[in-house]
Length: 109
Image 1 (tube, rainbow, N blue to C red):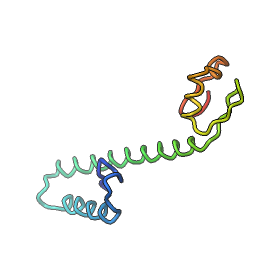
Image 2: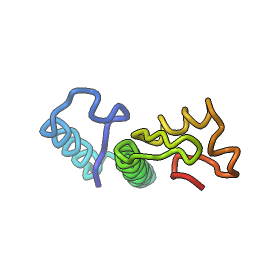
Image 3: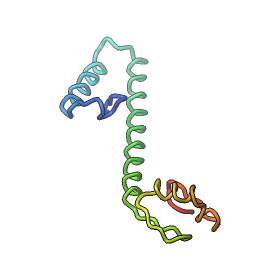
């Protein structure tokens, strides 16, 4: 079980500092001073935070992949790098929209 700062890596902490924080929380969980329900609450929070962190990492990977993909407009042949730039082009021209296609962040449908 790992605990993470809500600010993530942006806080400027090194990995060693994160390990120190995790050890601190680990020692709190092993403490005899915590009530069983407090321990359960901390463990649930840690599991939920881990799930959120995993989802954020997946979204970052997808965004990184889509940012490097080259998309070609079927209307004018313009090639742009990244789904955001392609969506902006379609919003301005409606080339894909007029062809019954929808530009989404998962790609083109």
